[in-house]
Amino acid sequence: MDFWSLIGIWVAAFLTLSIYSVLYRDNPFYRFAEHLFVGVSVGYGIVLSIYQGFIPLAWKPFAAAITGESMSGFIKLIPICIGLLFFARLSPRHTWLIRYPIAILIGFGSGIAIPKVLRANIFEQTHGTIAPFAEIAAGTLSGWDIFEAVLIVVGVICTLTYFFFAVEHRGPVKWLSKVGIAFLMIGFGSAFGNTVMGRVALLIQRVDFLLNDWIGAILTIF
Amino acid sequence: MANIDRRIVFILVALAVIIPMLLSINLPVSVSEPTQKFYDYVEDLPAGSTIMIAFDYGPSSLAELNPMAKALLKQCFDRDIRVIGITLVVDAPTLASALIQEVAAEKGAVEGEDYVFLGFRPGAVQVILGMGTDIASVYDTDYNGTAIGEIPMMQNITNYDQIDLLVDFTSSDTVESWIVYANDEYNQKIAAGVTGVIIAQMFPYLQTGQLVGLLSGILGAAEYENLIGAPAKGMQWINVESFVHLLIVVLVVIGNISYFIHRTREE
Image (tube, rainbow over all chains, first blue to last red; front, side, top):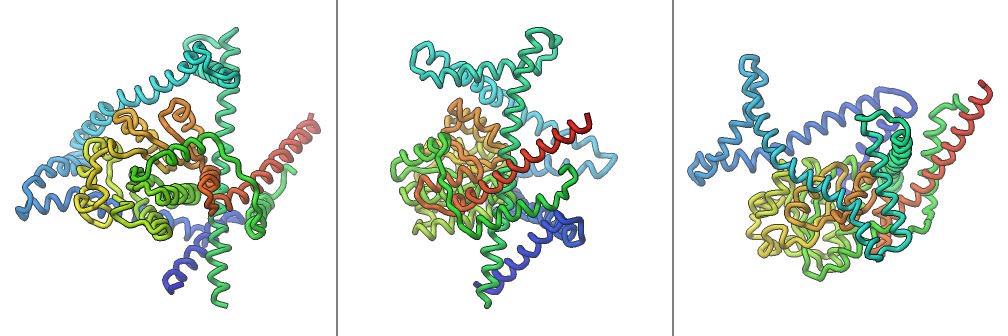
């Protein structure tokens, strides 16, 4: 293992232990590691955005146009200028100019997203919910599959009923919405359980690093 | 029990992680249907097919997603499936590039012929839509700066029509963007490997067929390693994870019992 890899492992181990030290109580090591993490994350993101976004997509084509290599780079001036209008926010007299890039972004985003999101998330999901009933009618589903198909429809109807506030939740509507709450709780429970699994995986990865990489590196010295 | 010092719980969790890790305990791993579908789809692709892998995760999700990405890369290189790596996340390129190169070195895959990493481009929606028309219009060079026209494996690849499967490894909602803009618009087949936090909201897409397969966090990684017959970190960590889950279940049960005893005494 080379010298710089060893330094990297020791720094990573120190920062890992510093972050976990907050489990005992708040301390300067934790705060140092926390602030360093936030600072490095932002700095790293900005540098990567400049090198992988701004320079290849804006600066290089524009520079090529100025030097006469490729005149198409001048077209980049349009999005660059629109993008620069975001900085109008810094001047109180010119703040109104920020409306133009925001309007373009919202207009583009809505125009692109609304029909496709409706199709992918509403129509496809609705189709997926009722499609198994065609198979039930054709007699191609097993008993368990039929139970699943019915359960999904019951879950969807009951859960949507819970969020239907146009009528008072009394009588049958109340009971449908109560069943809907049960489905919601099962969904939240599943999401929470999976979240716990994810968080524990992060802990396991750091412990694996400390035991194998860090302590392993120490043992190789001796 | 209600006043137990929470640091005792932290110590118990730490022990539940450290002890099984030191003892290298192996528990059986069964394969779930979403993982099996994912594996079968890749396995059924003929040699010479192309998979595009979107490494849409940063260092904070590396623990859950790197093992499954590694397992898929091993399967692809073993089966002569070509890999195009990209990312929609700004802090992912370094990690993704290092991971591909590590597996490629292990499997003897050649850069430019068996795999290429195109890197990051800003504007997720524009990137996804743009590649549907012409990948070169979005990525004129790869991550190393090589012009895309000079990369041998990219000679016959223009857009999604030549991509047999797109796999999104993600810890965010990028998989929904891929479904909305690549699957719905260009009929691109998509599979996903996601963190445990967002797995619950992905299952509806699997049921409708908008996803052909789905890997769930470290469990999905372990299952996939089991399927390809190459046990690695995923299988090692899921064993440890099982002990922590057992501890959490015991703590939840004890906590509930003590709560009900406390409430009964108060009444």
